[in-house]
Image 1 (tube, one colour):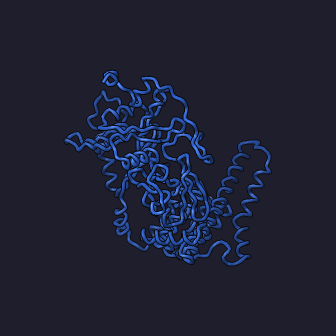
Image 2 (cartoon, one colour):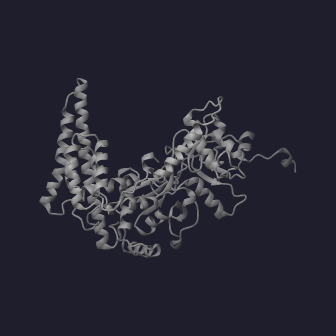
Image 3 (cartoon, one colour):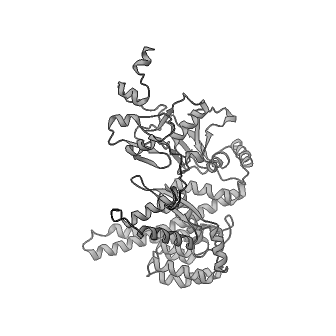
Length: 510
């Protein structure tokens, strides 16, 4: 998950002063002539600019290169305008279909539609409600555009604002006169304002946006919103405090980043306290930099407590998968897998494992790295299956979802009521949200013999999802009915010991 995807965002199209989905004008809704004008607006300049760039001779000098970079920037704005219009209009079509039919158009027959209705009643959702239609559409668009749901959610917010509220901004973007960032800032700062105030903001900012930097437009837009906002700032700050939270994301080389959203005064107090301890009473033999000391102080305070106190050590559960055969092949290059994070050095894994109270033996496919079985000596079959799915799937099997195994549940691919068995070939991990998608919103899923899952969205977009434990798909076969033959491994005493299959001499004698 990228840093941008976990940054806090409260952008909500329902805070923009416009009609709700299902009641908006969309592409071509004014008739054939209106649709043709819309088409020309978004694609004529785009096509002409792309053709001009294509027909130009090779770059002769830096000035020529910079001019072409400017043209490419304009082309990018035109593409973003066309994408925003198409995204907003397609969502509007889905909303209208849901309102008219009670369910989005799908490829299913009447019996399937009835099953969806029953599932919707079970989950307590209204198939025509925006809160149901929106996340399903975002997930479909994310698959179609090969992007994350969070990124598509942000794009859809901007698209709805441009297409249905800030039309002058959309026109300027389609003409390549402003950047996408400036257009996004205008929409973002239109939240909670009256339509007349939004028009005033466009009137003031658009002429500047044609020449000013994105940061300048962002600052001016925020200031205008503060001045035009109908609600006092004290009341807004009180509401914002309710959104405080902690989030994190994985970084490279075995590191991760923690993000905390708190009132500004609390954050400044925390930073000042950490900075004070980082520069006070520093041991002259301490070779750490000030930045490293700040990070260590923050870490120690949360896990072990401040030095003046006894602290409250945090002992979190940590699970590590160590590939035995990789260790035998090349111990220096082998990587273990830290649950919830990903690959870590084998030395770090062994250090963690040394303090672990117990182990679960995990058999991994030497071709793909996927977990294919777990030891069952100490577990009932249902527990063993749960352990297998935890290590095989790693997280929710819905395309693009990263909710961990402990935040997901075992879901039958072919329903239990329809004769589906509780086995590794008919079960997957799905979080609550995506169980709703599968059982009530018309998302279809098919298990493949190689362990992959084939998803089909309500509007026919298809995607293949492989288990989270898979490290390479080169040996996955999405068409055949069997997985590749495993490589031969010579079962020496060393291999048996690593796999836990080695019987000591005294055991054989007994």
